[in-house]
Image 1 (cartoon, helix red, strand yellow):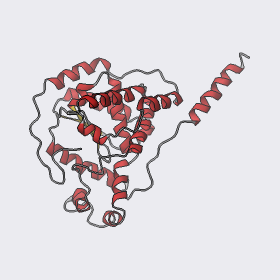
Image 2: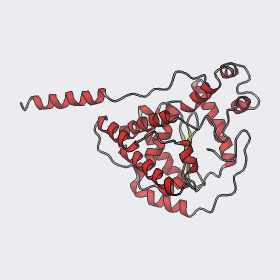
Image 3: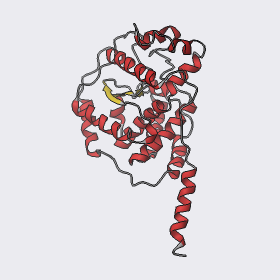
Image 4: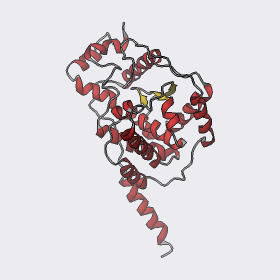
Length: 288
């Protein structure tokens, strides 16, 4: 019986791993990977014109180390992720197609621990890896978009954003590049849980943070309006992420730099109020 015990454990582990769904990008997408990356670079340049990027090497370095650590997961895809902090008291974060990611200072201020930040980053990375934004754009412009992307003007004068603007694809309010369905949110949650588990973070902390924000939003959504609009709740996140975590290969969970988060929160608290947002070309003054 003692000799059988390791075999039983191995078989049980294999059964659990077989239950873990691998999330893949939709094949319904007119953008190539290179076009996604180009779109992300152009979009990030517009974001920097309309929002105040925090020039704090300590804070930026911390966010980039966490992001780079998460990007080691095979479930993060192979995009050139970048991570920047913007001075905005609202609780939000967003990732552009191709990998550029922006984290609001208000989100950092709301964190209880580093794992919660890792959860938000993993969730947003999953939107990129699963190509949710460009898939949305393709579905909304199935007739015009393939022809436009296949033309010689892509990357010419006005760039990718300039070419897409007449089709209604931009960074403004209700942008199809940054708004997701409940099913896409759930996919990003579950794929994000796999990213977290791969690199040693507790996936349930992501669900607990979203649950905390939803509870706050029911009381006062002044700082959460954009987040709740961009991240529609797909149901009981704590339950289904916890259920997913039980299926994943067992890990000893730890955080990368837990001692540094309090200092990052202090750096955020010391920042002056952000200036009024500036409208940018091909983008609304506020990302939603």
